[in-house]
Image (cartoon, rainbow, N blue to C red; front, side, top):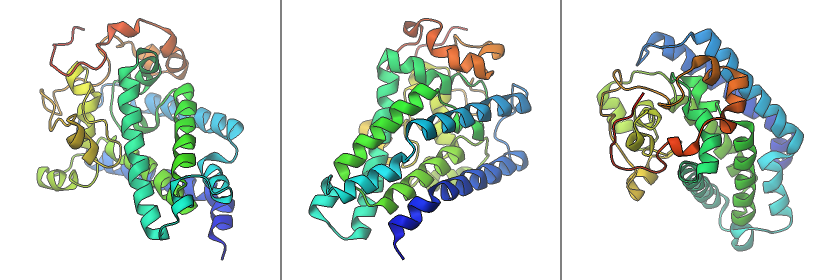
Amino acid sequence: MNWNNFILSNEIVIRLSFFFGILLIVALWEIKSPRRGLTQPKLMRWVHNLGLVFLNSLVLRVLFPAAAVGVALFAQEHHWGLFNYYQPSTLLAVIVSVILMDAVIYLQHVMVHSVPLLWRLHRVHHADMDYDVTTGARFHPIEIVLSMLIKFATILLLGPPVVAVVIFEVLLNATAMFNHGNLKLPFGVDRVLRLFVVTPDMHRVHHSVDDDETNSNFGFNLPWWDRLFGTYKAQPRAGHEGMTIGIHHFRDATKVERIWGMLMLPFSGDSASYTINRRSWKKSSE
């Protein structure tokens, strides 16, 4: 069997199957064992957050029909990229590719918090006043396009196997939904699990309204980068039940929890109202 042809022919089915499968699992888990009470109507948030996901998927399919898998195949056919040049074993290339692509996602995440213009786009993700599985896929279309272009550049430089790109895409989507889940894990389980993957309690800190907490725990999949680069924070100052989720200057649900408001959010307000890259604590003013 030609695995490249199989993956290209079934890429959409593979990704959608994992997306909806993980979404259902985490959504049911949230009902059974929620970490926090929600502050906004769940149905309203889900309709608008998932509506934005659908819009983003449509935009990407129109702009980039071949997506990341197609770029990986192009690089392979033209012998572009590190692994296509040196040709290590497939297993080694897959493992290293997934790890390096995850490192790029971490650096990209730090970048969108550090550059005011990019923060305007990224705050669509952070303005959600609740934290659940749909938050993990809530991004502005322009940020999604920029993220895809960064991914394309990474693939062209690395030359990862096509299967590595599929594994990475599936892992990234799955872990983003898991670690944005409103899930209550036993403390001991969370403590061990966060050594290998970003957990909901670890990433929830990143969605605090407090500046220093927002600028910590940037990892989406692998948890090692935050420890390595000094951006790790174990727990929120007010505790997971007491912390406030969102951005302190965007508390109007009619804007931040509606799809039209999300689309317009980068063009409203002052990016300087958020303390870019603050690493020390300053109490947020409502």
